[in-house]
Image: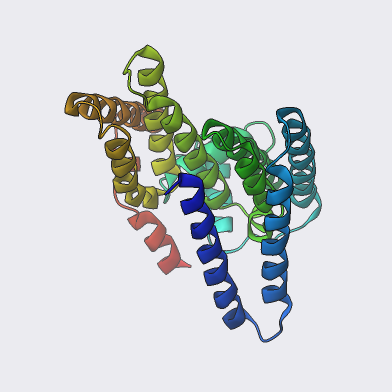
Length: 295
């Protein structure tokens, strides 16, 4: 069975599952109807794009990128969101960190990322703009991954669905790890696709190292990404299953090396602020639990 056929049936099953879940979310029928219409529109667009040329695909993608990006930046700038819960937690901690006050937070990498932006403009808007940029970058990555798989039309469908995804647009105005995490994992997937090949040369090794690098940053943005590591192992194993075991070991070693580099960068950054070597960002998330108890 072809990969495209597997993905097609997987998509139908996924949409069906989401449609069933939507009936339990609310008493009205608007959400199920929206999901059903989105599915039908995706099928219609997919059929229309299956016979398009590369030039048309590029134009359609640029149009979707422009529309999706505009929606996200408009939402980030003009839609107010009340800073509560972890939104307030990350914002307050990033403000302190940008002022040189050492803070140890859950998912310290995200706090550090916000603090870098707050050096330019210490306001919630900065965090929203970072989210909007990351989410727009995700659209580009989805299309690039589709092209790498040899299915630009599939990439366009993914871009279309992601561009109008309400939850993704809504989260742009919330200072949380979700949007940036999705972008980082797409970057990891992109480099994994370029890193896998029958020849483990400099090009493939560099791409695999970059995949590990961004995976490491992802772990510090959202620690739960550790549960995706077995998936990455499976991808590397099956990609090299027809080659030598030594190639699997080499590819995995380079990926882990890249991850170690990014984690080291986080540790060094934290240690420079703390003015002493510390592995605190890599340890438990207890500070976040303590914060919740105090509030």
